[in-house]
Image (cartoon, rainbow, N blue to C red; front, top):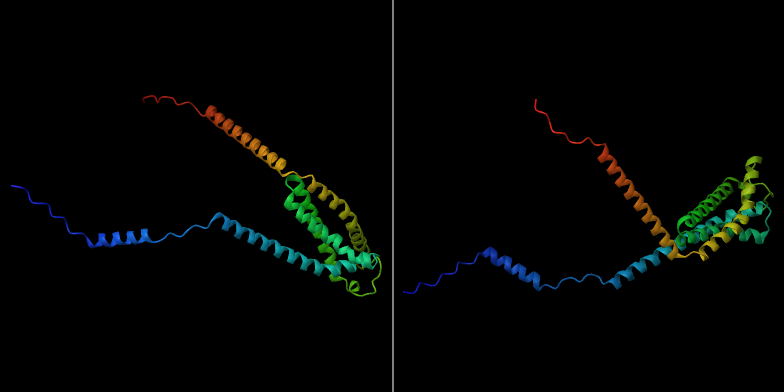
Length: 225
């Protein structure tokens, strides 16, 4: 007598719901990840926006500092043309040093940063003196007088007159460093220095482990009491 066919168990309603949800998720089109070209385009747009904003801020700051440096130049004996060009000499070298820091690497980049910091402090000091001395705001400026105190006046006049000469020297040096800069050689030198530092660190670590192994007491069997 043939055995009766097995009766399939009734499907669980929870499993049906789970299967239908999985089927819907599989049939649903997946969101595509952004293509690399689109990511590069967005990154390029962000960089251009950042550079444009930086240039705008630098130009506005240059215009604000223009009056102060021009008055200082007239106070140290510059004519109208020299007073017009004096802010370009001071703040222009700051912009040149800023660009050099983005191109150079290593010690040359540190040198460009020092030039940028020096001329920034000098420009800030001259703008500060211009704000404290009301006589510099008038058309009748006394030559050779940036402040009432003689020692401070001598130092400020020396600073104001030395900035153009420093711009010639430091600007020429920065341009020469940028023109002779080779990114491939700089990268290879940095990689070699990083590799040598890593090797020295590994050697020191191995020496310290060997010293610890030698200094640790050998295990001795415990004696019975």
